[in-house]
Image (tube, rainbow, N blue to C red; front, side):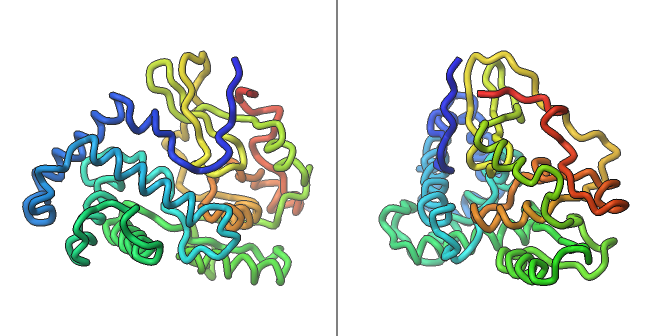
Length: 295
């Protein structure tokens, strides 16, 4: 079976317009109808359907890729909203908050239509800033609190701090205050990330019937693709003992700056014992131990 990797972070329209996804959008529509519709939506309440939600999500993702993607070369005024937010279909979850925030902004700024194509870039950037603020205030978007280990080169530490703070993360002074412990860049097989990208190695992160969402190692989640009729096992989930503390190589932050998107921590997780005791920065999920599907 030939699978062609998505070369950018544009939305998978087939996925967002599928019956399964539209039904999940309808769950969000019903939740909005119960809680917020009359107060926020006004006349728009009659036009809010699972299909209009789908089209709005597609527009938002297109804008992110076109104006906040890798090609922005560091000039983007804010980091992308994580892809996981657009896949959070819980009532009062992240996607619920995104849709609600869009209509709040529309009403507060007297937009006639919630159609991004009818507004200039600066106006839409302000909309995205409002969305991100709402996600954080409603505690459905958690930004990283990073502790930079003292064995990181001082100049690199300065660079990492700038990247973290620019993207609304926090630099912790003490390790116990952080949820991301950042080690120096990979020293064991330093070209491993480049090799993995070249080989386009993936893992299955979600299954929906016979459809699978594939994540490419060392690419952001916005590059994930959906593939039909493929026989593959979903990657193992974290067990209940995971404390939510990630031990990652500095490449995790450097690549976030390259793609203007917080990267998937699992890709950059290191062997903590080697890093602490011997100063050897090696990826925990080495190639030989990965359950992946080469495409």
